[in-house]
Image (cartoon, rainbow, N blue to C red; front, side, top):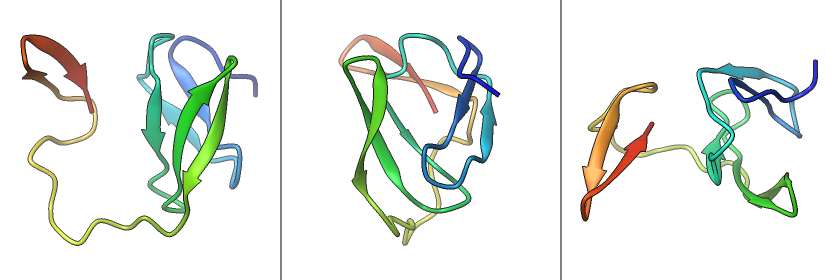
Amino acid sequence: MPDSPHTIVCPDCRHVHESWNADTEYFGCSECASWFQKKDGRFVKLLRNAKATTSPVLEPGETGIIDGQEYRM
């Protein structure tokens, strides 16, 4: 399944992540705990086994504002 404006497929484990948009620059895979950054139109792994040690303030899909800029989890 190719990436679309609303879906990201993890480059490592191929888990499908819904509800993303084309402007997404970073994402973390909840299945394999890898962290990615978009470079040249594709996602490149920054970290692996990046499991959180605390609970998130926002749940996946929720939005928050940092310095006046809205971001989606």
